[in-house]
Length: 321
Ligand code: SF4
Picture 1 (tube, helix red, strand yellow):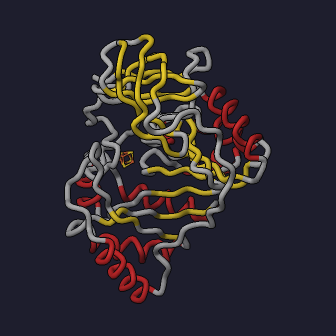
Picture 2: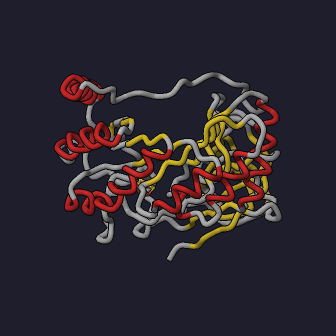
């Protein structure tokens, strides 16, 4: 049984620095916000191995008001219109405060589009209405199969009901922007994607197909398809169905939040809690989180930064706990 760690303002744990929770800034016009790592299904290809069958140690849930407060500071710093992607390493519809989160984001200055990325299993017409009223612009729906048998197999949960999701998707497309985002798995769901493309056209949804990518800590049921083969298949489908399948929105550069450490630097940190995986702890340093490997206990420690990009930090224990 996994633990659920609540990240509250009172905890003093910053919301920038790790991909697990909080806010991610890659110096573009997109801010990704990650309120939870919890997910309700077990996709066989999940890049972060989430869901009831996950075997890592800890999940994280962030206090809604704290997330919004920190987001506001970043938006003020950016001082340019930004898109907010509610894109956790889990599913946003599992987060109990999702409506409040959308509404509070909508009320912040410089927020343009608000997007959720979801598997759709918990979507209902009522929820879509509530999200829309709160200010949601787009739902990105990861529909990876069309037939009931394959959909259940890929979601790895018997109660996954693709027929219900199809109905709700049709409604979502009539209310706001809907993007279907199937992951294309080699020798697994080619026929299904054919049907998903036809469905997207029928309901007036956009579709963006993603190549399955191998992830060291994710679930990898098949090998990664070469980019050449993937792109050739996309071209074939685009021609066959007269549709664009790799469309991405306009991405613009924005100023990056100040970085607090660089690769190779040795720093003193406070190790404050366990990480997601058994071999990780989370440390705090100058308002940022750092995922630390090799530490056994909490407390003061000396670490070496082994990776630092876009304000995401990873370190290795040198001395201390
Ligand atoms: S819905 Fe997303 S987070 Fe959940 S198991 Fe599937 S891929 Fe992973």
